Amino acid sequence: MTMEITHLGSGSRGNATLLQTDEAKVLIDCGFSGRQMERRLGQIGVDPKSVDAIVLSHHHTDHGQGAEIFHKRHGAKLFANFTTCAHLGLDPVNQCRIFESLERVQVAPGLSALPVPVPHDGAENVGFIINSGTDQRAAIVTDLGEPTDELIQHLKGCAHISIESNYDAKRLALGPYPPSLKSRISGRGGHLSNQQTSELLAEILGPETHSVVLCHLSSKNNAPHLAESEALFRIEDWSGDLRVSTQDGPEFSHWVGQSEAEMITL
Image (cartoon, rainbow, N blue to C red; front, top):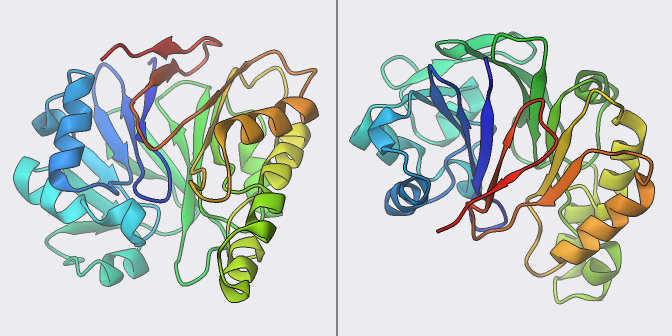
């Protein structure tokens, strides 16, 4: 079953990714207000009430702030681990379906997700390996200070990978943040730099991966051209499609297993 992946927006002010098949629509994270989510879905012709589920990576505002209101307005089921559920004030019995790391969960007809734990300060964060009933998998992974060996093994062979490329090391070092925040961002529980992400991609990309999206770029400490150029420098022998998702999505969609993105005309 072909799966379409569209980043509705990605960055420090909000994140949400729509997965679509012929049978289901699922959101990975819901980090915008209810009104913003409705507007962004409307730009690609998706009725919010047609969304089957929201699967949350962690509780931070830019990933989960709109989940409860979207659930109440449109009836989408909520999936999260217990820590995320508790931090968002969700009822783990009546509102939220609880999952455990490394246990595959069926989130909608024909769509399952494997939550893979990743290090991120103050949160029990997970990345997701998505399967739509074929032998081609997709990965959605943001908010991690470093890639674990476990994550690397799961990323290898994925047909599509969306991975954060949060900051440029030089811009972070010279930027306005206080030293404590700079240390947190660049630490093991922070975010991936452009260099870290490019080195990870150089390690894992092979002919099975057709498309990569760099996401969750910092507006203060990064720029799309910096993230893209760093990645291209490291993966020059890879022949797939590389894109950068920004805060002002949706901009394009990928179909798992295809190498070319389709641009969205608003």
